[in-house]
Length: 136
Image (cartoon, rainbow, N blue to C red; front, top):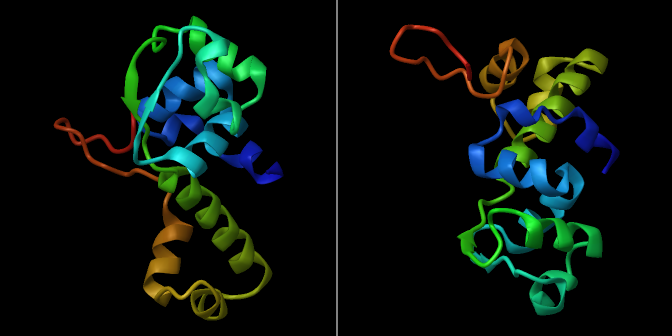
């Protein structure tokens, strides 16, 4: 989980950013690994959190219970955006140690995709209506 320190939360979707703001990135990643993609009830008290007790630290459950999400059933996003950032960081590091062709083979990607990953300044270069790229 040391690699999580390298993840840039600014590049993640709003729902994941909201969870990170409440319980931190490591706990958010753990929650999304275990429950991502399905609805999850956010309890109003730690006593009513059987589902979350098996996943999160008591402090994180308490923080969620005190948040504006308490008492709601929310659709948890999948962990794929975090996993993709970690993968791309690993690919960049592998290219720095080796080369693009070997890295492409190791990660089962095309050489072109490895080049695209290495050239991207951020993980979401989506143009907006005014022609700017990335998240603003």
